[in-house]
Image (cartoon, rainbow, N blue to C red; front, side):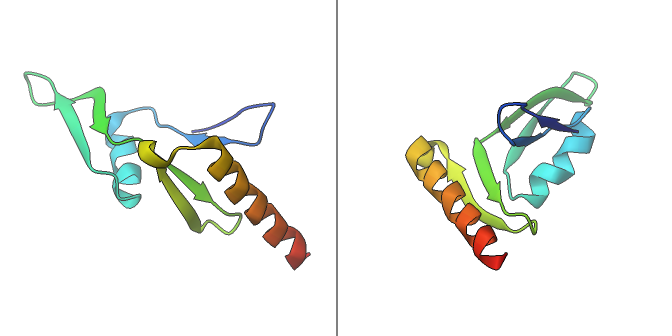
Length: 90
């Protein structure tokens, strides 16, 4: 499911269940531990390092931010760089 914020064009990826979300997290290289119930089934609780991915319009990952590098000025500058690149391609 992709959610959109009406003020900005942010796409945030989520899923209905842990089994659906896990392959996506794995594809992005997220180390994930899943909390399991007494019967061994996955709970909705996941533990992973927060990462944000800046993905361009072609679907290419252009930057990965962790909490240590999650600085609004840096992210905004990277977004502006992508915007300028897209405009120059015309």
